[in-house]
Amino acid sequence: MEFKDWFCLNQRESFTIDPKVNPGDAKFYFGRDEIKKQRLLGPLRRSFVEPGVPKMVIHGSYGSGKTQTLYYLEHYLKTERIEANRFSARTVHVELEMNSKSDHKSWHLQLAESLGKNTVTEWIAKLFGQAQSLDTELRNVFEEVNMTEAAKNLRAGGDLGLLAWRWFCGYDLKPNELERLTVTRSLGDLGAGDMVNALVGLGRLAERNGEKLIFLMDEAEQFRNVKTGDATEALHTYLRKLAEPSNSSVGFIIASFAPTRDEMAEILIRVDVRNRLGENYFVEIPPLPSVHDVQVFLKELLKELVDQGKAEKKIQSESLGVSVGTYPFTADAFDRICDFASQDPTKALPRNIIKGLNECAISAWDEKKAVIATEIVDEIAPLVFS
Amino acid sequence: MTDIQFAEIVLSKAVQRFLLKFYLMDAEIESLVLISPIVTTLAGTRVTLEAVCKRAAERKIRTYVITNSPQKDYQKEAVDLLMRSEPMEVRYNDSLHAKVYLCLCRDETRSFALFGSANLTRSSIERNIEIAMMIYGKGQGKDIIRELTRWGLEKLRMTTGTTVAKKMKFARG
Image (cartoon, rainbow over all chains, first blue to last red; front, side, top):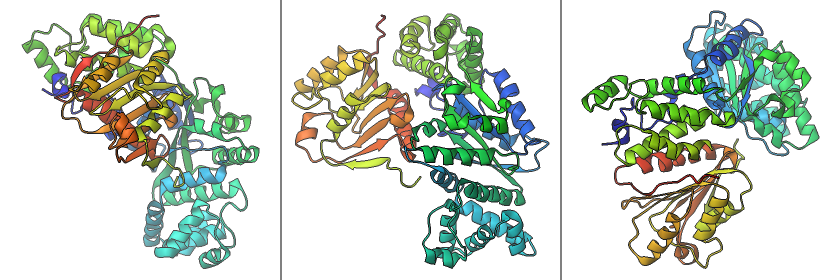
């Protein structure tokens, strides 16, 4: 019998949750009702009223669930009806990569490439189908002649379309390439604000197509790799401009490793950025604070990951003497793993709890045991939580 | 980003390069995964199996080895060494032909992996013609390492035909 059948798993191979591998896992947000409802979803809903698009920074330790939070928020944005939002969410995942010399151009390039030429080209094509004059529409959208010209060329396809996309990505183009696009300069020649204006223009283009463009940027601790003063300032300017209240077209949720807010990259927490975003939009994802929190987390997780019907049948037919609510743990083993998990508050992290559960289950499976008893937890939990 | 190098073909001493990188790594390593049908002590090479075990023990790095059940004396010698090490799990699967090595760091961007034709043996380092791919936890490399981790640490460990030869123990204090 396979592992998944042994433990009555609900259409999955293991107890691991990973929305990157299994998109269906994005809907899970276990055991953190207060954070979920009051700190994440409340501000998220409000952000569609003012400033009109979400702008949020989340932070926490490794394994605290930042990436899961991003995917959960994306799931929420795409599936829940947000009354104030007339648009559907166009979410774009970006795993930030920064080195010592990375600047605003590098950040902009990552955002533009993650959004993708095809998406923007489709938006323009749709606009062409709806508008009486595409030129006028694009002028209204981009509010700047070079951006309008580049956007028009995106429709052309082929080399010219690709060149236009390279312009939007912020590549330095040669004079003859600029001439082909009928633009007077490369994007970014005027600085970080120039690039943000183009991005916001793309956001307005998304709005014309009934979508709100929201970037989900993970691993913002990468900003700490930047060592050059000028590059840091340019990145800061880029973020500050994106955070401006006047930008109601491009949203972002940034996730960073940082057990405390002060440990984030400095550009994320400068006063001008904090003022623009608002204190409520900096959200810490802490470890699970008490035994009770770990119990709730684990019970909610087991309820979703274990096929309750199958487990009930198995428990009865094999007289396992365990409750379906804590299966595959015995009652004592369940309490024991929750105790272990919460002994050191810094280790009571979703990643560790899931790893502990998985390893206990593998150990029980190795020994052909139908349930996870305390002996197994005593053997495995110290390896995970110590 | 297109200019991020996350993969590299290694044509020479691939396993040694992986082990040396593991040995010298300054970031916090959570797990070391060594999947190789044949395992030997690597005596006479720059980073021996004993040195790897010692480093894993000193830094409390959870180490997982999956290999064929040892038939020859030189394999038994290596497996005996693994059996005495902690924190170490050893599993056997006699259908195993894959060679995958993972060094998983707490900071995912520091993780790296190697997969290819090379066994964890001295002859793969010094004599055989091998080819391998080194993957770094940057850009798309992260996704590849995640996939390899899922395969090595979950699917392979739990697949029918894989048996546990030594469980990992927790040494208190």
